Image 1 (cartoon, rainbow, N blue to C red):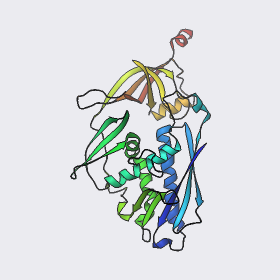
Image 2: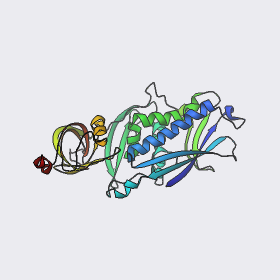
Image 3: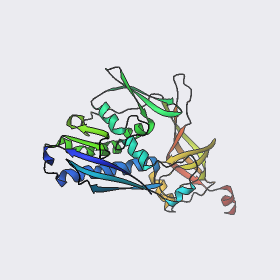
Image 4: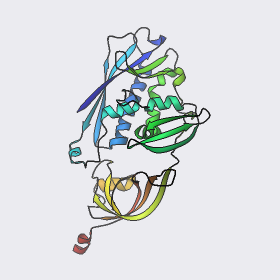
Length: 309
């Protein structure tokens, strides 16, 4: 188990007595828990579980809570292939902005503050020191920001983004002036005041979509090399070569994982599949394609099973 700690601090006249209305506190903490769990699910599927624990900070001037984030890797993770790495709880917390990123950079919460009320002119995926980053150009102020692809993926996930905003909800009420995540001493990770809080409903956070991503819709036959018998982990399929692909056909996946449908290794699947490719300004592919199976139409068993029948 891996565990990391951050501190959340609420400040304002409503907290003068070092107490906080549970009607304001509970939804904020539940949203924080949902945010961490949704981010873990996005990056790790069912390969790890997270738990959020709250402890009171009694040595305080405002209303503060220690937030302990614990991550457990399930036993089957030991069999993962090398490039199917689990994102650690420390990395996830750093990408969100409730811990300070070791290498610096813009976090999810920092990006929310930057883009609130702005219009995005263009977005492109680029390579920087071998890592995928997004260049986001903001309309009107000749400004651009560079963010890690993991931060972009969280921002683009509406569920994760809404949870992040709901954590800040106490600031929309009278008597609450600021909320910050810090190390419990002096190092502040992210700070929000009332003017920084976006609205979930009125759309003052722009969507960002890279212009140099090409998505091809494919109907084809793939062969199963390694299925995922539980959870949302990627499957290893053969399409021209071995590929990793998520299966988003939830109805079919549930039937397979509950043994209603049989599809052992070697079976052929007739599928609808998205192939996502990132290109540069010359139209050249700059990274490996990403595959997603959107619909499974039929299953053909391996050849030896057909012969036995």
